[in-house]
Length: 171
Image 1 (tube, rainbow, N blue to C red):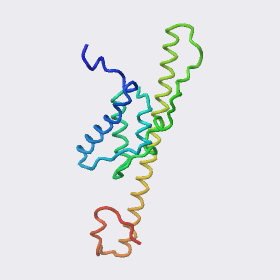
Image 2: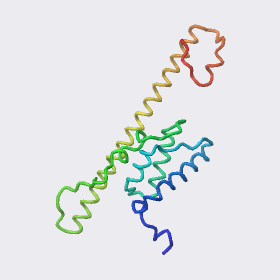
Image 3: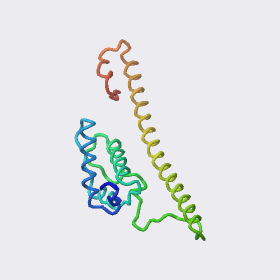
Image 4: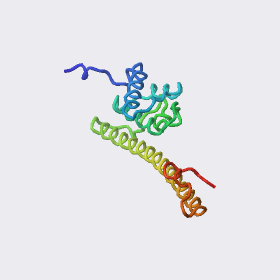
């Protein structure tokens, strides 16, 4: 057995969470060539309270998701946390339909509850991604309308060079 096999789960090493968060933020900042954002104390506390059933890999994925959602913001607050982390409470448990009468029945009930919880979390994350895509689409449509208004005003494209890059709404 290796040292990694003997490592306790992340939920038992909450003191490691801030260190891992800083590591992942630094890694992502280096990869993206951008400054590293930081977490609000409340967001960091929520990360430390979560049980991390997916262990370090789940934490890393959450940090990457948060950095992407934060964009150019340098402070990540609780509003960007995944719903399953933002809404998690220490007393949260999986709901199992009925008291199982045998070990195989208990395992089956637990598997069903875990799958249901995973589907619920996936749906919440998918909804958040859909909202972000919807907002981006509206922003692109606003840029197209601004360009159309500009070129209607200046049909020969006079001074249109500044619209070639990022859209600026010109009225």
